[in-house]
Length: 235
Figure 1: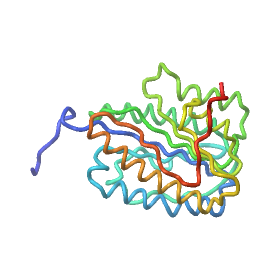
Figure 2: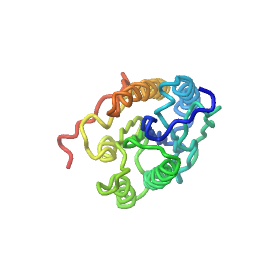
Figure 3: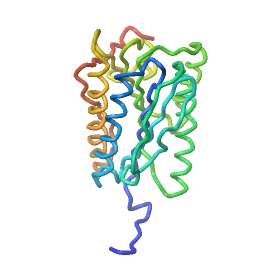
Figure 4: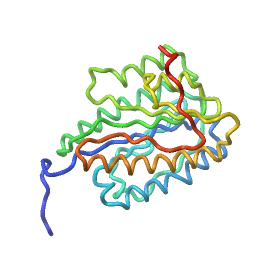
């Protein structure tokens, strides 16, 4: 109805997704080309479906030596294009976790000011390499991100290929079963990246459906070239 407004009590709670993407120098070539091909498809698939766009908010964070907000947390129906990404620098996991912690808190406070209600955020962490910062630094930054007393702490899925370390990826997800995934040996990045982002698109769409059921659930993507990292032997 023209001119009608919807109160915050009548709106569905939003489900925030943060894609955290490694853009270090080792991602040059096929991996980053695949990202730049797939991000517009993600924007279209999510942003052009009113039922999905109503409840999903998406941000894209890139990291190398430093981390940047490539796309602030957005309703994709209002986003014309996601900027292209380019590669540079090393692989600072600490920079990624620090930026995520800052963004999630800022976004939550901003959303509350506009009457939004949030489900627990999801972080999709994608890397093709090991962290180049000292373990103490990235682990401390990670601990702040997943601190149990912080109510906005996200659920994290981690996906690795290339030189990514399975045990590190598992630690990123707090060693929770079926949360960290690694590509099979010899799998070409040119195949993995499109598969992964296609799977993430469907995961986000499927997760949005659970919002309408009143209990948002992070749906795992299907990525044929990747398998779950066993966590039984990890601390």
